[in-house]
Image (cartoon, rainbow, N blue to C red):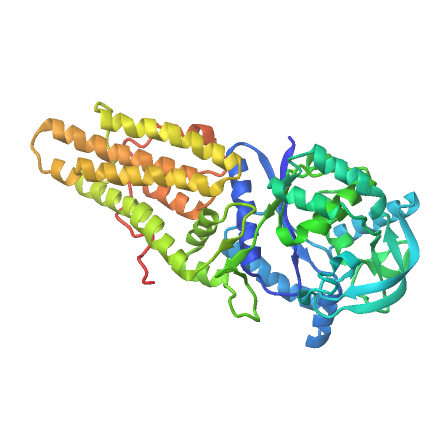
Length: 511
């Protein structure tokens, strides 16, 4: 069976996990979990990019080897994944033997093909980006301040014939509108490609940079960090082996907008074309998290530490917030006030209140047993019909990656269930000695339980632990390989189940 293959960008080993890392992992995880629930065999890859000049320089400053630095840094990134409940299938490190072997194999093949050649280079180099610059990188005749120090270099290096693939790449992007999502990012790439692109320098002399993968045809040089890192997408799934065809092409490469051009939208497709491989189906490009409209920066002092929120409010609350707030492709503002408002409102007042009041009423009026459901009155059937409409919308929005809209649709159901409780007033029905009111009370509780089960089931990709907890409280279990198309159908499967006692899922917090 063909895998649904998705990847994140591999994180660079010269820093700590930040908001962008956390969001990208969560986004990929939501997609992976949804696809598994739809019956797909998913392979979710993430990892660590360990080579390059900045890693070597940082290790030298700390008096350790680059490998020791990477062995320490990887603990932070893996810990972040664990805390965020990221369900990756594979974690690749670019220092692994399986990756180094593929990089050297690809370099040798492209060298023999004539796509890599030795030449003298004279120009400008940006240590911060670890790449050579072109004149078009200047803004009004000056190098942008964010590039840091720019140095002039003259040295022999190996180059990849990137320029020869430019006409093909332009045609490919124009003819494949789903290759870059959202589509306005494709227009930005085509704008970049309007001017000539230089061949890509894919080596660094060992005397200047020793921390990298040596070129197989000239070990005086190591591989340029991007030419090394991008190949993780194929090295992790057995490039050159028979099993590779079970995974490639990737369904999604999930990346931030800052590494779309030129790395993923220019270097990577041209490398694949030269290797004779199909293109990934979609480059899924997300925006940045901002603070008061500005990019988060340590120097500015507006950095959000995602794991602080996870430890204080729980991973699922944090996952809900970032998925609810950011539409893929757009930038989004993060503020503590907005987070707390969502936490207290959507999670506490709406979902948490529904769970608490339902379990309380089931304990008080039904001995913690979910009663029979008899849909006799119009207002009872309205909720069932409303769910049929909502479930179709939620599935559509998940498929189209409109995750905030999927969550808003689910919360329509949550609010309707809370309103239903207010209208039916089970606490009043319980006081009545009329047998019809008793039946009405039982049906009210059963409807609320079934509605909550359905919401929790559909919420699994975004809030996996909370969903499992709610279903456990209702006496049912959620399996990752369950059939979502069947689990989202209104049913009587909860009748007779014993539920847990009342609980507070989201304790209210002060601003």
